[in-house]
Image (tube, rainbow, N blue to C red; front, side, top):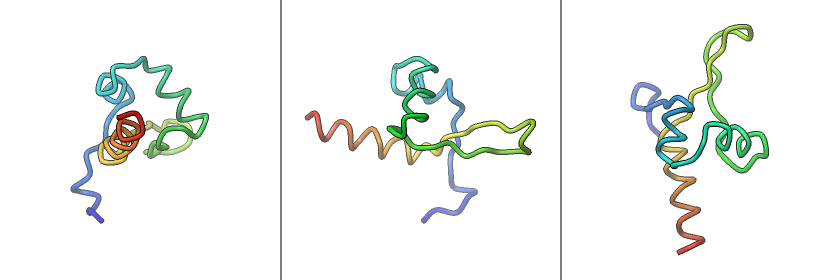
Length: 68
């Protein structure tokens, strides 16, 4: 497992761009449990969501493998 300093964390807009989908699609898939959950950084009132790039790439690889 990589150390936290080796992880690349992505904003939702970066995830959406990577997958060529809308930001709302990323949130919809996440809420439905169909997409990796983001890390919540900060306190409850001012938290931000960030996705681990490796998790997103793994998910994408799995999806491509099923459809390929």
